[in-house]
Length: 109
Image (cartoon, rainbow, N blue to C red; front, side, top):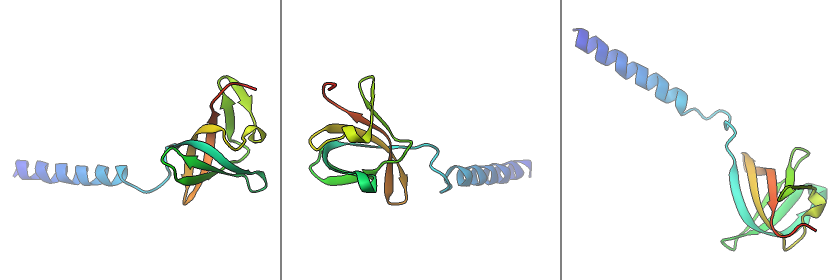
C-alpha cells in the first residue's frame, strides 16, 4: 500500500515538474546566432540583410538596445556596410529577429 502511494506521488511530481519545465512562456534570454556578410542596410526600417555562410539570405532588425562592436571598439549602425562580415546574436520575437549584439570582423577603420 505504501509502495503504491509512493509510486503515485512520484509520478505526480514528475508530471508537474515536467510540465513546468516545458512551458512556452518567455525565452529565458535565449539568443540565436547568425553569421554572414552584410548584403544591405535599410536604416530607415532598422533592418539589415545578410548573406549567410550557407549562401542564403537572412535578415534581422536592430533597435536602440542593439550593440555594435569590432574588437573592443564600439560602433553604430552607420558602420555596417555591404560586404562587412558579421556575427549576430539575436532574440526571436515571433518571426522577427532583433539583434542584441552585432560583431563586425576585420580591421578597425
